[in-house]
Length: 374
Length: 94
Image (cartoon, each protein chain N blue to C red):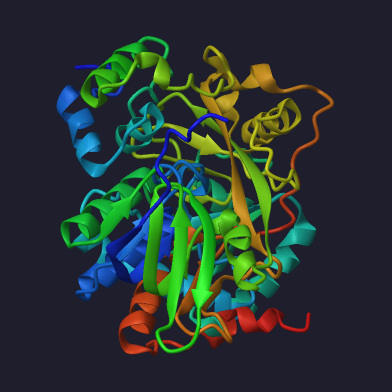
C-alpha cells in the first residue's frame, strides 16, 4: 500500500477559537463583518472562495413588498432600511440602490389580489400602491402595454452582490476576522461536559471553537446532521439571462428583471425542483426569453451575453432559520432564501446574539424550534 | 491590462490574491474579469497564466470554465420557441 502523501491532520494548539463560522457566502460574511464591528474576531471557513455558491448566482434584489406573512415583510423592510441608513454609508461601492419595486400583473383578476396584498402589508409599515396599465407606463415607459398593472413600493431596490460580499469580506478581514478558503469540513463533533467545544475536522486540520455558526446555505443540512440537528432546507434552482449593456431603460426593480449600474439587464425567475443540478436548461431559458420580450419588448433584438443558474436554499416554510439551536448551547444557525435582502439585519441580530446573548428585535419566530414535532 | 471588456488590470488581480482568491472564477466574481462581451474568450488564458505564475502552479492546474450559454451573443428573440410556456409568476419569493 502506498504511503499517504499528506501528513495526518494534527490538532493546532492555537486553534481554540471563540467563534467559528462555516460558510463564506453573503450570510457568513455579514455575520463576520458585524461581529468585527463589535470587536469579536471570528474565523470563517469556506470550501471554495466566497461567491462560488448561491451568493454568486443572483439578481440581488433587496426586496420587501410582496414578502408574506407580514412579519417577514416587516423584517425585510427593516433590513432594507439598514442598507440605506447603515451599511451603504459604511461600505461605499456596494451599489445599494433603492429603486422602488414593481411586481407586475397581467390580468384584472390579479388586481384584486394586489389590493388584498396592499391592505395586508399596511399594518407592518409596508407601503404599496396598486397601479393600473397607465400607471405602469408612467413609471416604466418601455414596458409593454400588455402589462395590466403592478404593485409598486418605494422600499424595494437592489445591490451589487459581488461588491457587497467583497466589501463585507475585506472589511471583516481588516478588522481581524480570519478566513480559511478552499478548506472543506470533513466532520463535526460537539464535546459536551465541562469545557464545551465544537471540534471541526477539515481537509487541512482540526479546529476547536467555543461557538459554531452554521451559515452554509444549502450545504448546512449535511454539516449539521452529525450533531443530530436537522435543518429543513432544500435546493430550488433559478435561471437568469444577462443582456449586453444598454442605456438606462428600466428605472425600477421588477420581481423578474432589473438593470444593473453597468447597463446589463438581468432577467429570469424560475423556481425549479432539480436537486443539486445547477445546469442551465433550454426550456427554462427559452421561456424566460419569451417572458422578457413580453414584458420589455425592446429586448427582442438585444443580445444575450450569458445565462447562469444557481441553487437557492429554501427552508421548508420559506422563512429564515436563524438563532441558537435548541438543546445545543453555543451552536447557531443562519440559513435563508433571501440572504441579500436580509444581510444587514441578520448580521446585526447574529452579532447581538453572540455578543450580548439577546437581540434588539424579537427573532424567536425564526428559531429552528418551530419545526420540532412537525 | 488583462481584461479589456471590463478594464481589469494586473493590480486588480493582485488585490484579489491579497483577499485570498486562488482561482480564475473567484477573480471573475470579484472584478468582473471576463464578464463582458467576450465572456472569457479573449482574456482567460492571460489570467490563468498570471495566476499560475504568482501561485507557482502549472496553468493546467486550473480547471476549464463551465460552458455557459450562449457561446456567442445572440438576440433574445433567438431563444424563444413558439411552444414555450412562460414561467409562472404565481409565487412570490423574491
